[in-house]
Length: 300
Length: 88
Image (tube, rainbow over all chains, first blue to last red; front, side):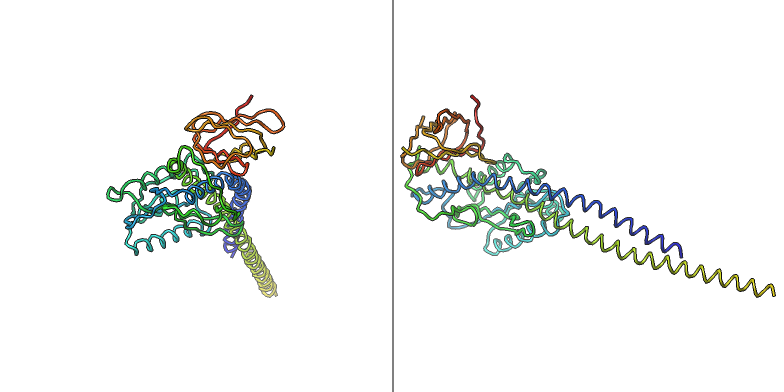
């Protein structure tokens, strides 16, 4: 009988320990989320300026540039997946991976080959487990993205894009990442980076006044040459920052519900343990009373 | 004469913003000086410093490599992957 109480006590202990850990993780991500949000906001002026400049060049010059013109036949498409390095973030990674799978299925259906670029240990693990190949992988530092990494990814995809398709180059580049909407909501998002669709979502210049007629120095195509890689990098960097903020928010949410569940478990097990203890006591009393009765009747 | 609204931004933050009466930058083609009323320009920056003459007097110098400069409606934006203010 006593053994049952002991089992419940053990379960309560373990739930309490788990709760301590999840609570700590919740607090940690709550504090990191602020910083990550600030970084997203701080990178805003740069990406706005770059986007505005790129749309100015793309709209006001009639240059045919490789990065803006759509090839007639698209043979191969690249997908860059932004996942996190660590789990314990609810559906964060599975959402982004599922979205990427759907995109890949769609692209394959259109008769395109798909190559992958992976960011974050979780997506790398997912691919390894399924024995699938990825073109390149970047792991570590997804919690606190560095611009240098974004530049590296940008260089890698742009140089692959500039290769002719016959030599293994890609004709399309898509990115899949979790966008930070609010503390409670993170949405996996798919964006086609190249060929360029400048007017899109959050990064589009919000004022509708027409862009002025620019004078380009040295000339429009050179400016475009220099700007587009910068634009790609800034989009990638933005995706990384968004993904980091979303990861912290997802972790916080997951850890809060884990702590709540631990609380529930503790309550349930405490009740059960009390019940067990009480029935143990009741039984002991009835045994003692029964024993005393037996002794008393034997004496007579 | 109206002043220029200037902002210097790098990839992860805004380095400086304010009003200036003149901006001098080095593009790949050579130095360019911008006064209020300049026509819209998009130029690639060469390596070198950007000098701003602040509206109230004084000057700010910033190192902005590997970036570009855009001018429109008296708004000057200097954008670089990495930029920093130079002291003195």
